[in-house]
Image (tube, rainbow, N blue to C red; front, side, top):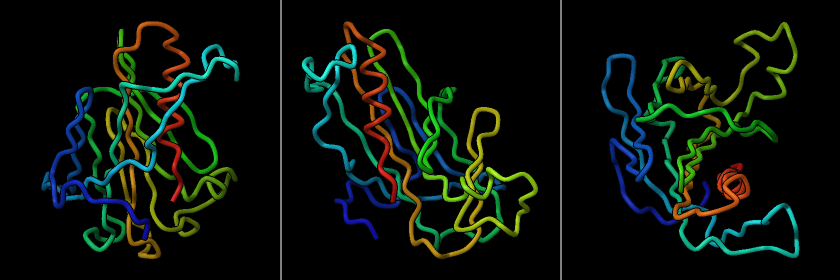
Length: 182
């Protein structure tokens, strides 16, 4: 299991300034999770994608939402609900990223996609999936545990605020800050 400092144990809501996240089962019961420190501690931004214009992010932080698979039932749907509508940002290297950007801030959340290679081939079936499956649905994400080969499922969040200029550069840096595959 990935070693990170636990900030809060057995919580029902991850609160951030821009998006709160809850998890519930099919009956609406909260699924508790731990809030861990972020693996990203020193974030920099490449202004205009120029390696000679790298600036540190001074107003940014993140948290990892850790779900324990022992607390989930196999093949049951669980609903990861952000409090605001998030937009698709990127999918690459077995990781999916969604986010939200306002006038002076950006927020991102990424989750691992262990079935990316399997899903790339048409004709795959449910029996081909491994570990767990997370799919976007309306304004939420549906999580389904496939097997118990992983102890935890980590969702990585990061947000940056007080952005005055170069929003696209900061938005990209925020997304990258959540790209920590287990």
